Image (cartoon, rainbow, N blue to C red; front, top):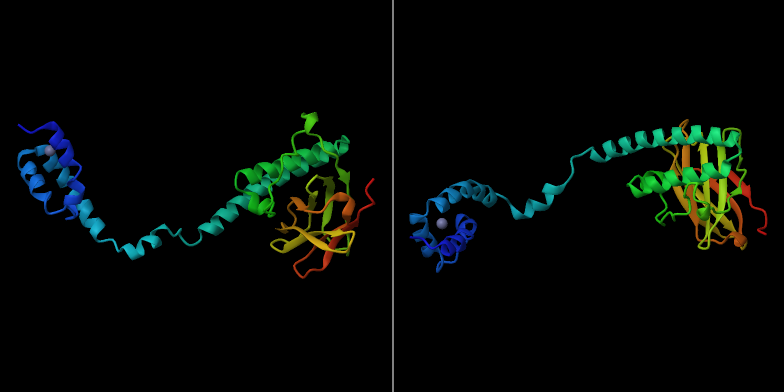
Length: 252
Ligand SMILES: [Zn+2]
């Protein structure tokens, strides 16, 4: 009669036994137990092929196993871009509606909320490339307590071929300034960089984004510069040439 506890104890050693990794002083007890325990024999028969496979693994190559297949990154980026264009299209429709209704502030809050949401679910790299967190200031306008002042901006193109901006607003935060912008005509795939000019002449990076061509682009740009110290906002193309710029009036 086999002791049940002995069976349980020895059964846990089957894996090591299959890998020939059992200490020599323990192995005889297990072998003797296997003679009289059909359950353990059956389990060993199940484990043995797996053990053969495991022995065939080169530990030096284990790290290679986790490498994602080539092209996965492109597939993900494509899926993200498609998703984003849907979001952008909805944001643009909303912009037209709310602009007509004179609710630009509400729209900016909602558009900002979309960006917050996108950042939250991992699309942030595409929509808001700034590593700083998007703070939850952009709650829907139904939350009056979350209302933040938005200063409307008129971004002027530096040439007739400059991108068009549908809406742009500046938000003074306690930690810096933020511009929320909806626009089109940013050359698809080209990297654009945003920056704020400080009163003392420094150019502070405010993030960068990829152009989406004719598709509407919704973007948040931030810098650690307080509103009273901010005199200009500019978006530059890949060559560093300004494509959109606006001077900010002295803050009240
Ligand atoms: Zn057993």
